[in-house]
Image 1 (cartoon, rainbow, N blue to C red):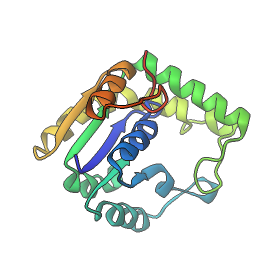
Image 2: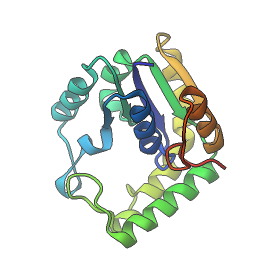
Image 3: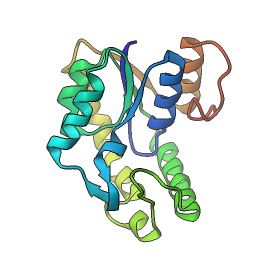
Image 4: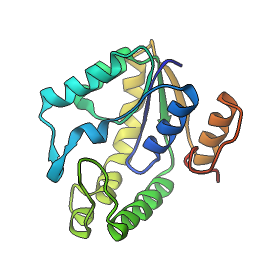
Length: 184
């Protein structure tokens, strides 16, 4: 694994696992959400977002997380491995709900000065409704997308416990619950 993309439904723990994997591999980590969500929750213009993905993935080794179709052709063509967090809907929905409530209550800064608000969290494009709307569709389309990229090694992890075991097996040493996205 030299160039890895971690994918999964919103709230599955993509960024957490990607950061842990990048740290263990000793490579840079890139987060597509940070490149896409400009200040004031403005979506990055397509050329700007694609340039960010292209510049990051031009490096010889990296771990990137995100599901953005806007630059999938760049990232997936350059990756050698896809780690897919394909967790059951109740797991993902519980996680995204807890994470969203925490972010609203603590006013945690996410990217470029953005913070989740109660109004935003409950909107049609908010994280909870987005996860509910996209979970099953993503599950179906990911199988076909992976098949269309036969050069990629696909690692499909179906539970946080399996993700934790996989991370520990790949990189023996101390692992925390948060580094593996939980170990239940």
